[in-house]
Amino acid sequence: MSSKIKTIICAIALSPNTDRIVLRAVREAAAHDAQLHLLHIIPSYDASMAVPIVSFMGEEKFHQLIEEHKEETVAAIRGEIDNIKETVRGGDIGESVDRIERIHVYEGDPELEILNMVKTLKADMLVMGTHTKGMTEHTFIGSVARKILRRVTVPILLVPPDPAK
Image (cartoon, rainbow, N blue to C red; front, side, top):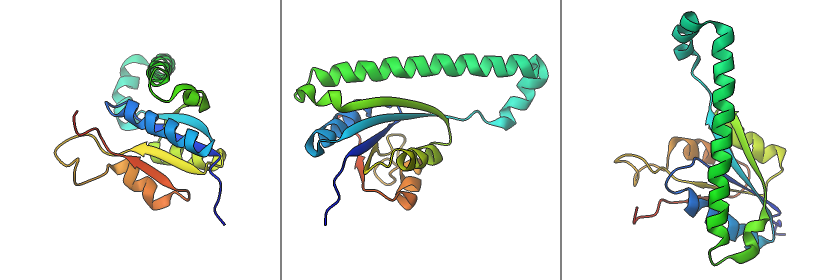
């Protein structure tokens, strides 16, 4: 018995490979007649770095600054994802881009948040990119993807970087 893929999560890091990853996820959603959820995780602020800043500016101002920055970041990410959606819409896949059900932006540990979203949405598939930084890009797939592979309970599609970039 094969299980039907109804919900796909596409985890993106807003790298140069993002458009390629989203395009692949949209194509998978169209092929399976599935809903697509885009997910971006803003890494949590390192508490050890916050201590000197808090002692300088005060805890209340620090938390206000963090919230303002988070709101600005979320708005910028949503704008970037909307640009990607428009670019994809103009491509060869037509109405398939309308399968993007929702854009999720959260703050936290990327591995834990992705795994939590897979569980929360009862996703049937996860799409994400591989490592795109440094000299080791052909040897390692990236720390987040590697950690996800160890723990995810659904099929995962890893999209490699564009060799032309």
